[in-house]
Length: 238
Image 1: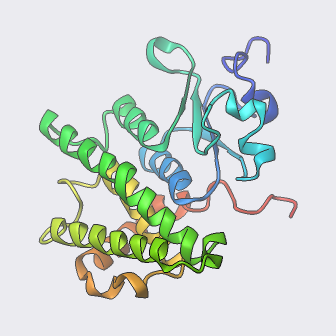
Image 2: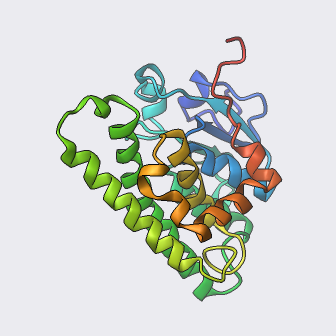
């Protein structure tokens, strides 16, 4: 570790690298987590994935919080960051933008494309993820025990509204902005998450054929199929 480009990162001592010369991914296969593994697979960048569970023992550990003070996956360390210096980075949207800019791919062909793609990444970060995530909490997890119907109905309504926006945007289009991009990698895993939450019927999934076909196209991509399994949900010795 002394001569490693990861030497200044405590997270790399908790989750040691096999090859410290490649991007280190610290993640778990949630909708936010798989954004980064899918992007890395699509871009063909060499990387190592480290399984960081959602348990406080992992995401709230001193080692992980030193990389992301918010204590949320995913995060990366790129030993070959800007200027050839190691870079630690958290927040899935920021990581997607960084990887796209690093490679010059999945970010559009023009400056205007880049800004429109960024707009939809921000839409996912500010609306799709928070609203769908809260819906999942009130439908599948502890929030399901709350008897007051107002929170649940609020997030059902917001999820329906968001699906309506995407349905209209995808009319006559295969992808959100021009060719496949990080905007799609940001949005589509959260659409898939509605099935995991058992919430598709209540938000009228079948009433959004453009969105349904869009997710099918996304899930058919080989890099997506691989990225959705990285890192594995279960520990290797489980």
